[in-house]
Image: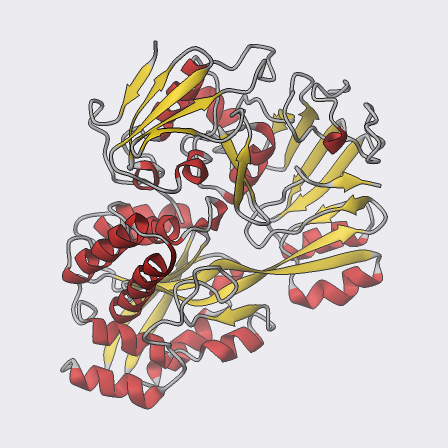
Length: 522
């Protein structure tokens, strides 16, 4: 019997995360996986091609936070449960049905019969337990999102999940643990993960990710083609050109200025409001930004609607809360940071701050973020905060500027989208405001009065149901709008280009990544 016990392993809650992807017959043989809806065994199209907007070579499902790796791993690896990324609803993947509730703090999950990895080796309960151990090992980014699980134990074709406290979203959170062979090393899984999903990796390079159909897959969502090729193009123009030429079936992250061009070349554009955002983060231990009124002043000083109209070409929604309006648990926050220079100046005066202030605003080098910086600089100058803009790659910015005990930066602006992991408020708030690297060594907000108030409200929400739960979530969103250690300027809309006459069904996502798991070919 294999047992993984989080407490016995003395796991850390610090998340080392960097800021938000063969010719054979299907093993499933289900009508869901046929391309014509008639249960045909052979895919009608040999290869699906895509243009993806994010790069990266760290694919280990237990540790990755990269948009490319996460999206790609959806197709190759499975959790006990997976999320439908268009609805965020959990469905059985490696599990056979829903969790069986033994008590408020214990569940049993039966494994899908005869599930196999793409190597042909059977998936065992021991593999599930080992994968849980890897995903919650010291320093991984998933720790704070799974800390309600005390231990996981392997049985005969099933696993027992024991909780540290009652938690209503067990099934949804188990989707974070993607199962790989217990014997696989971190190095092997970083380079080319092995999974039990409908696809398997054929090749992963800086330029391309190639998939082949997993002939051993026997789950509910078989591959719809023999092969799949994702061409990596972080440059917008390169992706648009490739899509325009007609050799690409789906393109990720379409810039608004290319909508008419691609529609004219025979593509359909699908736009979905998402959680993806540009946020401003403060070093809350560095005066004067240790005062919430000063942090609020910065947000009131930024003309967000002008950023959306000009730099974002209308493809975003100004933040009126931590969540976007289309999310189920949305509540308009106590403070809505509509552009108001006089209010910003008044808040600075209330905080006893005399201007001018000179500092550096760090940003990541994502083009859509650097495009925002000049206007933000001008807006802040209006209230006497003069900033020098310094842009860096995320891989350098976080370790060199923010992630150290003596960090002396004041502000940064960056993108993020933890909705790739799910959309429940507890998960989304734990990403940026949990007991992890974001609050301990980035915003330095951990342990403050505001932090403690937020987590008391979060604990109250996760233990409640119905209206009482929503009231507690509302309290959380109000606290965040008061404290703003890190806060969104706007939530982006995500646009996907889909070649016409290829799919009878394709669902665009409101988060980063592409999914072909529910697509159907014509």
